[in-house]
Image (cartoon, rainbow, N blue to C red; front, side, top):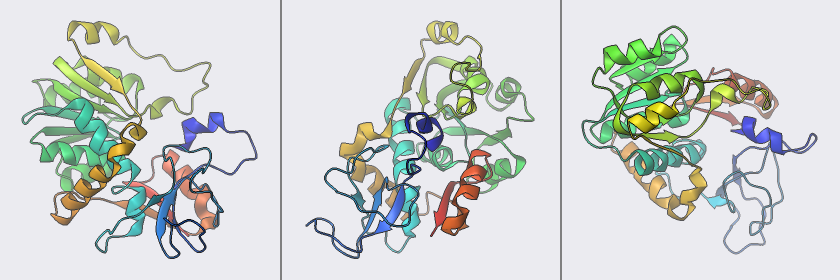
Length: 289
């Protein structure tokens, strides 16, 4: 997430990032010593924060007190029981409005958000197809998450893969990547399909003055009367607990599987970050300090 935001931060500031932190001292009545909170504290091992006015934030208005996870790892507050989980929950259900029998395509399907979206789609009775960047991730999506089909977009023709796996067309597309892959998926959508635009990772490394060109999608959107909507998860901040509680319930019921790629040691933060940008992680990438 820090990649597109980095353009807005000057050189020399603390690297942006969200963390689970333990309260060691407090002058605030809501935040007791010993509590664990989620905040945009950046890449640092200690932070002093005015909880009522924390300053620049990616999505949180103030540090969020972690509720009872019933013995599950606190790191899930950075993944399936945190911002990525709520991104999947609200971004998919509210915008795509899936119906039983719908065909759902997810790009970036082995990431923290994409893998979650695919499982929610299954819970809603949908057929799920994922696109990801390695054969290992394809195997995980199919064997463990039970996607109906998954493909390595680097070695597969996207349009042909969709024609073979879902000749009836696509009803919902959860888009994490943008670019040519997404244009190909959109070309295979059915009448009145819905597209939730969560990210555009295919262009995050591009020169912002020379963004890559993608095939024209406007004619398809117009002819098939598609709905395409971008979003930020903070739009649903007033319903934050709803997403956490539902995702937690699904995990307890064995209906939602999660995976983390954990790197040990603050000194390996940069290594973990670069690996994440290269797509080396499966599920949520976290650093344990």
